[in-house]
Image 1 (tube, rainbow, N blue to C red):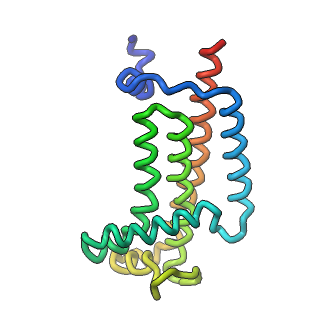
Image 2 (image 1 turned 90 degrees about the horizontal axis):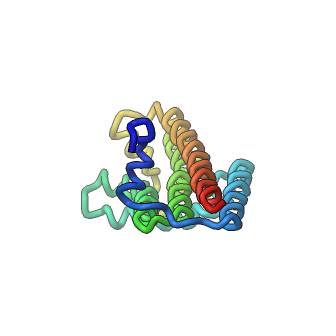
Length: 185
């Protein structure tokens, strides 16, 4: 392998092997799904998407799971759970070399960011409904860390990061599956 063709992706493929091929029909189906989901997410006025019902259950479970590690980690545990579950799924699909499962898991990972960002941005106004608490996680955490006045900026950054991550994941899946169709010709 020449230095000119050496990229992180080629190094990963050399170490872990090629991704399992994805058919043209599956590629089109997944890309349509992601496009429709993004349209739905962009136009939904509530900011609480259908996938967020699953994320809410994981969030609440994260508080319980991380409760062994002290007060601050218990509070942070909800958000950690929301991010770690899809991240662990992505790692699993990476090892299995399943491009669509890997992409879905990373898309899910980044889909959490806009809602987490909204939750962060709400730290001072406390307008969002809460499950099982009187004060939001991020009101407490930002208060402890002296960041309460930055809630809007941090929340906006998280929302932007989420949208960029979802778009990058879709672009990667399109690129990855296009490679499959080009290698089959």
